[in-house]
Image (tube, rainbow over all chains, first blue to last red; front, side, top):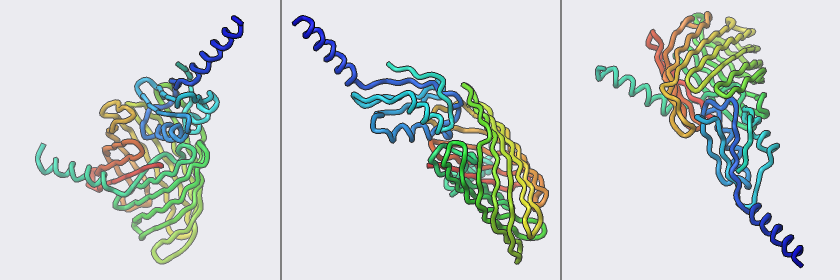
Length: 94
Length: 214
């Protein structure tokens, strides 16, 4: 009985964690010009799983916030950044 | 600064703001359409490009030139390729090549022409340099060669959602045109997906460039 409750509690906590929005910080190389980086925001905003996109040239960062319960794969992020003309250096999830 | 000079600067900025011209790299981000134009009294150059890959684009191009022998116009279909790109934390550098073919009108003569070009640029958030060589060999009228060097410095390091302001010094050499050698200081501004430049050569010829992509 205890084991069953334990499994239920763990499962429910995982469900609740996965239902949160995710903050993703992408370090991008070559992103020095806002005119040239418009493709990044345009492409990410097209995706239904993305709630907001914020570009910071000072830090070389693209910040993504996903919709609640949604995520985006590293492969998708890499492809979008490459298609926009830049390179991903690092992806961090919070 | 005198009111006459201030008025001239204001008029240049206003002209640039409303000009129907656009500019970008020969290849932009995948899926984008770009419109770019460069206008001087003796040279008009208008491009519309579609980047179907991040390193390739097709373009339709119109050029009009005043030569000592007469007026020269051409409409070209063009293929643009990004040969090499360097993406580093604090700068980006690119080399592009393009080639095309199209129709030519020189005074009352009709013909065809091929065109080939090479472009290279490097920019940080503070500095910019670019060079361009272009060669056209028409079946009627004079050959057209065009060489261009640009150096730029940003007035400040603009963030993504701010208007960026640059000072650009441009040197053009095109021996077949009415003015073969031209030095033009330009003010460049861009905001979101629109970029515009205005300036005047040392001879007083106004240059207006406008570019946008969507």
